[in-house]
Length: 140
Image 1 (tube, rainbow, N blue to C red):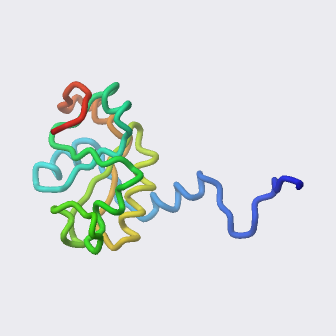
Image 2: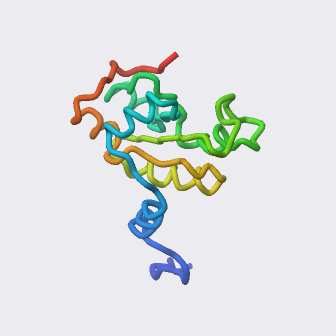
């Protein structure tokens, strides 16, 4: 069988997918996220445990790995978190550098969570901004 090396009709590159996701978001800088979290937004760390351990945590953030995010935040899901009981919940997703989080926030918007967005630049930007972090690990 000959491998298909030409993009099929309708296919997009990851750069195109990322740009489309970000076009739907009002991405927040670290200081905007800090304020939003203090005002009640759910801040969600979608990084794998190994990255959380290596690069630290943002106090108060929920650790929900990317592979289960939609199930935990869909208000119609039996597997949702108790806080995910409404579609107007402000959810701010972050990852290490702000790429995967854009895709994840767009996926939450697809579920109807119209206030979902992400932290531009991820936890790396948060740290550069001098905002509080704690040593890595799994938060209680």
